[in-house]
Length: 289
Image (tube, rainbow, N blue to C red; front, side, top):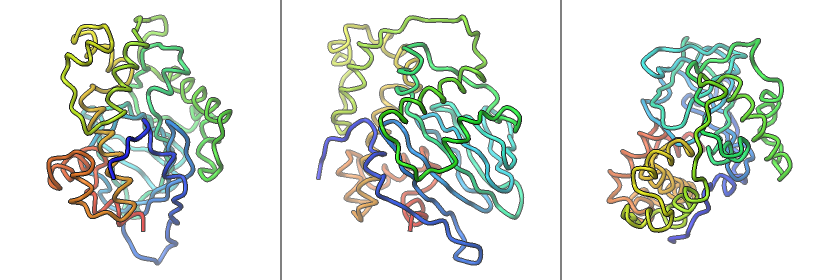
């Protein structure tokens, strides 16, 4: 069962189509996975009450509230995102999520691999957006179009176009000076990234990273985060969780999925899963049914 994943198993999830229940059906979190592509995953969701416990992931999370009020704590402040407003969360930033009113809230979201943003930005450091809420009048029509029909297939050309839209949105709202450029050793960093992603069950020593990249460990640590939004160790954990998600969706028991993905045991998987997605594996799987 130990299959080597690509960097982004979202493409393997394209066949899943989960219908958001209509009013009056069973309450609880409701998730519907849309079509995706390498480095892109689209999702529609609705929740009542507290939706997610504090968690963080290694992708940009760029979405729009469709109904109700979405509230979340981000970088020490409580934020509110109204219907028609957008939100931009940077990779590896801790946040939670919940409904701002008793009616609950719904949203669509696009998870974007920082590496895809890197390609669109031609290797520049990742933009950081300090204020995560984008007001109605600042919402880019091209971004709204990316979220309008999450079931529309994404071909090679569309993938590039979406990446350029996302990069443009991030640069527009970035808090960093436009003229600040730090050279990154992208070819070397990609070799480290590929080494981890090719088999995330293996915990490589830092000397192996130095060998494949030709960089010292401190440069790797600094530049990996600047390039991909997270640390090498966190990137490995996320790829393990990608494997576990696919196995859980396929019906594998949590204990077996944990071991196959390289976690110490089921408890270890559950801890990492909740820290990353804000839900336990069991609750996440139930929301997809």
